[in-house]
Amino acid sequence: MSDILRVPVGLGDRAYDVLVGPGALAAAGPELTRHFPRGRALLVTDRNVAGLHLETVSRQLAELGLRVDPIRVDAGEATKSWAGLEAVVNALLDHQVERSEAVIALGGGVIGDLTGFAAAVTKRGLDFIQIPTTLLAQVDSSVGGKTGINTRHGKNFAGVFHQPRLVIADRDLLTTLPERELRSGYAEIVKAALIGDAPMFDDLEAAGAGVLDGNRLDGAVAAAIAFKARIVAEDEREGGVRALLNLGHTFGHALEAEVPKDAIRHGEAVAVGMALAFAYSAHRGDCSSDDAARVTAHLRAVGLPARIRELNYATWKPARLVARMRDDKKNKDGRITLILARGIGQAFIDPAVDEADLLTFMETQLS
Image (tube, rainbow, N blue to C red):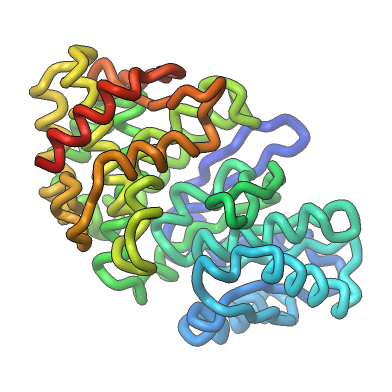
């Protein structure tokens, strides 16, 4: 296990580790199998991931002495719904799951969020284990305990905090990812540096596109997870500092909400959102235009979009984007909350942004 990086998430009696690197699943051994006293693993995945990874993962788990009973659901955000939650809970009960057994989530963020929520509410709480198959899920949604589904009011408006017992971020599971998906996941890595680790950003900036290669990627993944773990340990339920992890997301979610399905990737929207957050900070005089320009240049260097016009959509309307931001979950007292920056690695929370000024800024960005 010497090649596997171990990142602890310190939450007292709910603490767990994230194993990072190629072969992490095979290396997990007894650390994984102790969560399955009946010798079988109930595993939730979507049909796309099943076609790519289920056979290999089942074989590796069999070598550890576990029989896999898979629960397959449709791929895509539409599965993160009340109907999808009901289907997974019923499938777990059909398999006569016991409270001593953990449930495995094998897939991207949709599967992790859905499975975690289902585990939290089935028989008043089952343990679950994350085996994320996308870079985005490895560095973001698999760590921190946020689970949930989408409602007609927006993404993740129903859910609970339910921490996993183990996260296995195996680089071997990323080999089938299209390059676009890999770059999209990288947005959540650089986000950590932009929030609170300027030296990390310097390293990422120096590596450029090469940061997505091999061992260098493992190190970046572990660093991003370690940063998030520190934030989660300090503020598990997002009552304060954890809100910083939403850098770029208020802008990004508004962009996602305006486009047709699958027109842009979440990480692409977040990348543009982070560039906008720095550009808006510079517009207000909170940070230098040089720092905003560095963020934009680095995102483009790794192949990510950094401006709204670089996204695959043509009919952006500034007022509609601001209206979307007005409906964000982080807002309080009817005011828009944004994560902004005083510089690279110096993010802060503004709980009452001047909406008229924000609209003017968005109009300038789209002019």
